[in-house]
Image (cartoon, rainbow over the protein chains, first blue to last red):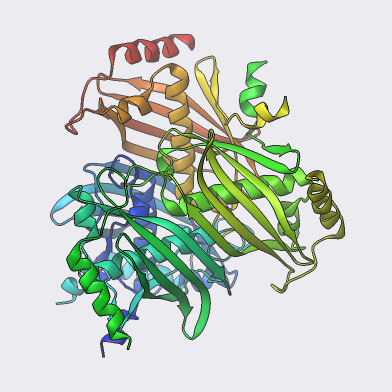
Length: 152
Length: 152
Length: 152
Length: 152
């Protein structure tokens, strides 16, 4: 039934150790220079990372909702290579690049077909209910390790 | 192949005369009240309308890009019924509710399952390169009429 | 001392019964059509309303922070007349147009000099900690009534 | 007259070699974690840089509007130290840290009183009408050099 297909929001997923997240550029993402506004790539990256955590089996939204701990972005380093435009179909590729007790580092690339539009390294820290850094749940760390080993 | 599936951005589509567009609420959409920020529903509605035009066969992005004319929002009337929250899967239902030479009226509802979260009426005017109202392309009007007749 | 002047964020204020709030259009506000994206006017209106409540003596941010109740937008009806562009200086004029036990109605206009760019009517409902409609604090209602009488 | 005061949008300015830009955190800037959403700091930084260029005498908006060349962000490196919250008054401090023929590097800090909330280094490239890197206008380079010498 076609209805069921349309009614299911997009989910990305892993292809080996790399998470794929596709999206289309809407008017809201662009600016008067006719291209995607630079801060909006940071939103795209977060959509992809959030989906990546879900796909890896780390339900960070439930953890946040239940007051058990939440990820916050501690550092972003992004290089913009080529502009994206209205209507472009983009693919965000994300890969776990560092794993510490209370933080993760994710490498991300924004692609339009074979073209690299932007590349970023993002560090996310896990904070407990008090707002202090807290060890990530043990099973999440296991799952993140498994991702890493996939790449070998 | 799974890769191809992930690499395809979401597209909504028509179920009879009603267009369906599904999305998931991300951190960027929420505010400090813990719910979707009211102005961000307006962005959701525009994503759905843009996809609705595409699905109806009116390539308004190409028209905009080629300088042939573009839609601008002339009026929005939205009522907020219940809040949406982080991680919610929403469905935007859109229906052509009025068709004039140089404008369209679209009725839209934001649903979470069977719950109505918001309902809106949006008027979009078609403007020519000069920024003046301009008759919509004849084949678009045909296609919009066909949508209407579907509902009978 | 010039430093003190720069270090003070902008605050609007009342001129008679009408609240004035000025802002400049930034890249982030615009879209690929070269004008302010329609949903971003809704953000402008909220900045103005928030400042209006503060100027009227209703400290809704403290009320929200202390869990005593918060305003949520229940309805927005906006008409877009003329586009605003990058770098434009805009003035948002807001006026209390309706006062009920648990809600207010505010009429707002977006001006560029003498030109009317958009006009809106916004209903905000006051919700208690449970998320249910709740009577607005009595002293706020007094202050809102005073605004009204100013206009006579 | 008070009206004139309210009707003037905020402008920041230089205190020695350092540009000051003040703003207040609105609902639109926050997310469900109750703090400013990380991508929105990037918007704050751009508002400050845009005002910094204006204050330095480089009218980049006119240059963009007249098709003579425009700045695009080429690289952002930001570290988030402490969260900002709804209603906070923030001060963005910006300083020219690098000056090349076709690009500038700006160091920026987001302060809440004496607290450092975030610090960033942003590289902006000047692009000509063709979208290729282009030498910045000679008088802008002069002005940027003057800023630098102020700090000695």
